[in-house]
Image 1 (tube, rainbow, N blue to C red):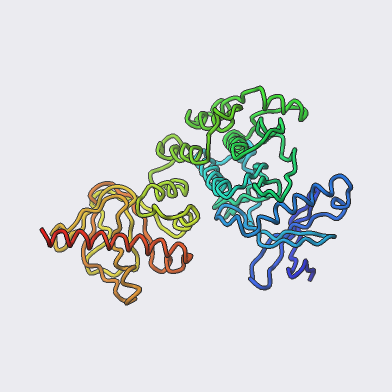
Image 2: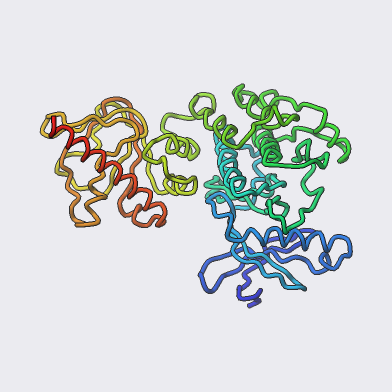
Amino acid sequence: MQRIGKYLVIRLLGEGATSRVYLAEDPFSSRQVAIKVFRTDVLKDPIQGPIFRKLFVIEASLAGRLTHPHIAGIFDAVGDDANPYLVVEYVAGGTLAPYCLPENLLSPARAVEVVFKCSRALDFAHRIGITHRDIKPANILIDDASGQIRDIKITDFGTALTGSSDITMVAGIGSPAYMSPEQVRDRPLDHRTDIYSLGVVLYQLLTGKFPFYAANNLSMIYQIVHADPPPPSTLRIGLPPKLDEIVARAMARELDQRYKDWVEFSSDLADIYRDRAAVAMTDAQIADSEKFTSLRELSFFGKFSDVELWEVVRFSEWAKHPPGTLLIKENDRGSFFYILASGQAKVQKRGKLLNIIDAGECIGEMAYLQSAVSPSSDIRSADVIAMSPITTIKLGTPALSRASQACRHQFDSAFLKILVQRLSAANNRMTQ
């Protein structure tokens, strides 16, 4: 079997003008990886060679820094003079590009969710000083199952601005159709160039068309600098006006009219889900982006990082319940607890009201807290009943025990805060 360094090559995934990408097995971690090997003929080219070696150095410098659930990880970089290569996370579903075709468009809700996840990942990169500079569907990988997108991963940070003084950036890099006005003018760039490019991606996902069409790059650049694209709703019937506004602001030619940061952009995307009818969602559906936004707004998760919140999204179960729903029954067993995302519930024992639970508060958390002392201590001591329409976040103790150490630490800290508050309240009652 062919090897690239310590990695066992399984097959060729694809090749382009500058590199070949192989699927390989890492024998030490027993995981599949993708290996991008730069082509020897390109590296030997007197003009292109130095440029692509510099791109390799930029991407290699990011190994271990871009740890986010929606960024493809860079595991290893080998700067062999003849054949330098990068070892990156393997994502099986290909790229987002097929979903930008008119005959294969996602629902508006799904398109917004994809872009929301991209926006959170790029905000993470921005916070550690990294601007991608080449956001496009081909650089957004998808994890799919049965033709449905389960998740996304941004890849190819070789053209990134890193803010590192010891790496000289390569100018004039990017894909013309996705380049911002300041990028095509070769002006200084910041995170807002990625906001523009992601706006173009959203436009394509919604309409199946580029915002601008041109016979050559010069004509394309002129339109990017001087023209306004038609609103997406004129190209796809039924899109809500709010999406036209979001796309227009993300793709604003003037920087002072564009979203000033990723938080503003993400917030407007999240607002789409607050008007569920606008994106044709049923009441039973709760998108990952809506879950993330809800978690970020709850005080319980106030200290959680974005990465930890996405982890919670993955192992939690969300549901909506009508008034009168019995969530927990006295004397039943259960190795899970709830956090109330919205609405109110009541706690009662033998028909006597003990407490009212509001949004952001825990229900049945003693099953988790006592499991550390006695795994069999999971008998419920009271009934919990929905008083209004509620949204619950169900967290299983076994799933939480398998979460990352950082995530578990945040839960423990949040529970400790709750216990301290309850003890303080009990002391106040006793002294009155």
